[in-house]
Image (tube, rainbow, N blue to C red; front, top):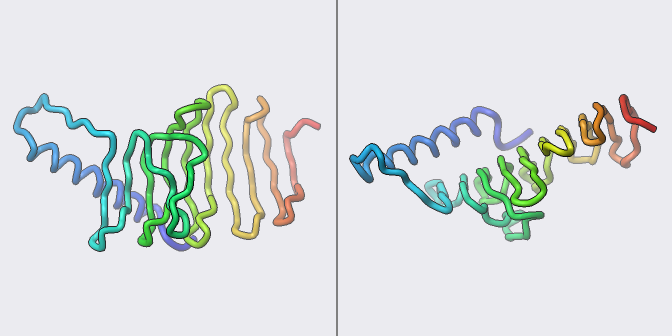
Length: 162
């Protein structure tokens, strides 16, 4: 996968936490002071938003244009050098879901997605740009593993009830 690798994501996260820590340390010597905000945007040297922390987060930037988010959510968004959303860790405001996604740089399609929902279980999706995918889920109350070909047909299913 081009773009972000785990070291880049960890580095950006560490940078955000360090910046927040430094800001808090130098803004007040009072150790009981708490910094409160609705959001924090970390920009690179070119002024491009690279990390966004928000409650709620802004709508996603895809191919240079802002589009509506499926549902309001709060959390951390990672953006590529062009400002387009590349993934994030979010708690959705409705539906009791938490999401972790990593998106491709080209068309911003999700290539890795984890969805957690107390009532509906958890699901993991691994998606290729051609549409082929693997899904592991407990969504229907039992474990399932499915492989999808690029045409959408299921080439392997284990544990799915007929």
